[in-house]
Figure 1 (cartoon, rainbow, N blue to C red):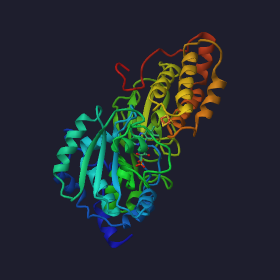
Figure 2 (figure 1 turned 180 degrees about the vertical axis):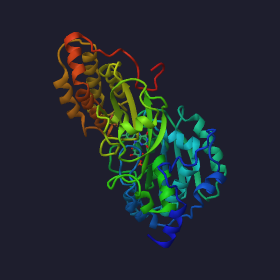
Figure 3 (figure 1 turned 90 degrees about the horizontal axis):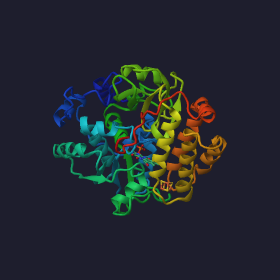
Amino acid sequence: MSAAEQRSAAEAPVGVARLLAGVRADGRPVSAHEHLRLYGLLQPPGPELISQLQSSGLRGRGGGAFPAGDKLAAVAAQHRRPVIVVNATEGEPASSKDRALLRLVPHLVLDGAAAVASALGARKVIVAVAEGRAAGERSVLTAALKERRERLDWQIASITDGFVAGEETALINTLNGKAGKPSVKPPYPFERGVGGAPTLVQNAETLAHVALIARFGSRWFRSLGTEAEPGTALVTVSGVVARPGVYEIELGMRVSELLLQAGGATEPLSASLVGGYFGGWTRDPNHRLTAAAGLGAGVVVAFPANACGVRESARVTRFLADESAGQCGPCVHGLAALASGLEQVAHAQGRDQRDRLERWASQVTARGACRHPDGVSRFVLSTLEAFEDEFTLHLRKGRCSGRDRIVLPTGRAGR
Ligand SMILES: Cc1cc2nc3c(=O)[nH]c(=O)nc-3n(C[C@H](O)[C@H](O)[C@H](O)COP(=O)(O)O)c2cc1C
Ligand code: SF4
């Protein structure tokens, strides 16, 4: 560790609350002044930020867990002036962590964006938020941007709400004035993105971590978490817990520990959904929360034992099928078939669909322009495994012991 790093590490947050260390009790956004008092000034970094991020081991928090430093290096290798896109669209209905960051600690996200812009020589930074879901966050962002001094061309872009709208190529297409649908890669955003320029698309939480790594160093970042997945992560906890909300955890924490932190389960649980709708179910309270174990974009839903996991999963699969951007055959037809198959089992019509569902799920994987079908396939396969006994009851008796109770949000009216 360099002398500068040692000095700044002494001022760094010491507990697990790093991103959320300064959150105000009244829920109002932390001002630029308060932010500076807590974390200190961030000198605009040069290209050395890239190797610092590489040695920090920071992985993207938007779901794909791609190493952040490597992505910056890919953009830098283009040797053209890039554009920075902050992905705060957060299309996952069970997630609210990116909006929480913008609403509560906007300067942390903006610092991270300014830091990568400085390291890569970018002048333009676009913060993309969902039109309807993030209406409140937009005004907080506008006020926060007025407090900043960087000579950057900041823009706030409102993106149509939707599960697929935040996929990076869909986002770039929207920003380029085209339909917000994913396109086939290559070219990757780091090669050709907004206005044809190399584009760094980074999740809002990832950039908030960058803001702290640029200040306090990679050793400090690695002092929490696991060797393979260092640091902390934000997780949105919902379902039947006493205090649903956004929590900052040390990566590698057990599901049971997180649920306790959220006030504990208010009812007996049958399973927890980890990673949201591209993630999977677990019945193991000792399941560790890491990207490798499916944490995805940071979602945990505590699912009550008296709800029907088969029906709920069928309802979510139908939602995900309807959210397909409608341009790749295996995604359009495959996801609709998966939803219908699950619905048939859930409502006990016809024969056992499990073998077919498994086959279809594996057939849609890696067959779309984006990873939407892969995520849905993972969710369906995990449903078949976690709720195997319930499936058998459905087929035998037409129902299981669970009630028809809505637990998983889809963002649709009344559901
Ligand atoms: C269907 C789909 C939806 C996505 N939605 C989001 C989203 O809402 N927010 C987000 O940050 N990333 C989303 N992603 C991931 C982005 O494509 C991209 O990988 C991410 O923004 C990169 O940031 P990160 O490396 O910091 O995680 C989505 C990916 C897919 C396949
Ligand atoms: S895989 Fe599905 S969501 Fe992705 S681009 Fe193709 S049709 Fe759209």
